[in-house]
Length: 274
Image 1: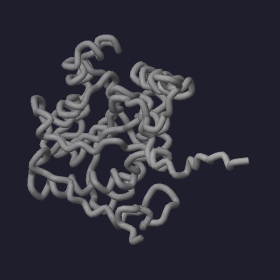
Image 2: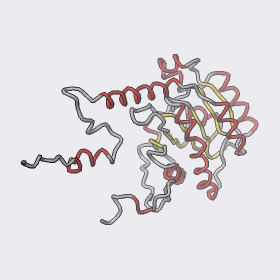
Image 3: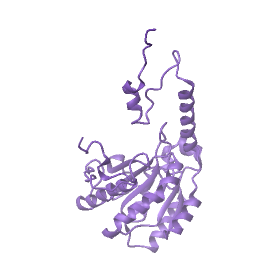
């Protein structure tokens, strides 16, 4: 009997690539369509992304956790009255509601000296990202910033907030710098990605050109330690050069950072010798 040819799946390079990325590659096909499993996975990921956008901001739970860690917080609201307004009118999410702005002015009057850094947390387009990553990131940021002696504001929570709302918060608090932690637009493989936006000398009316972005902060993306390290670098350089945004490049030396995982420092295959 003639030997029947055997197909060696391990020789398929697409299968090897699929093990290295969550991207939807090498899904196979059934006739001219996707296999049922791949189609169902896509629909599930799409549903996760939609749920992340519409998930309510659990600011009460976050304030309780911050209080347990000894951190004060302020709860404010943007000019967007509800989620529908927030999604339809991005401009409203960039400004504080009048009542919230007045409350922040009163807080600033009680603390006239200002602060080095105003920390803002907003739900953005994924409250899920904020719920999962705010506290672990702040813990790493505090570890690395303690030695520099930065003065910080209470953590300002803004419901229905967008990135630029941090400019108004920073201006009212007389902050030298602001950083906003915000849920990024969900992708089909990342419904919980946290973004950090840093601004030196914040004030209402600044464009994105005056901000530095550190994105994809999550367990499967940029680690908390790495993100905190990069933010501290930007803060130091911003104070030295008195600017932020497109004229301030992130040139932080990251090879010596410890990972948030148990992997060794040399685990980066781009840096490791064969």
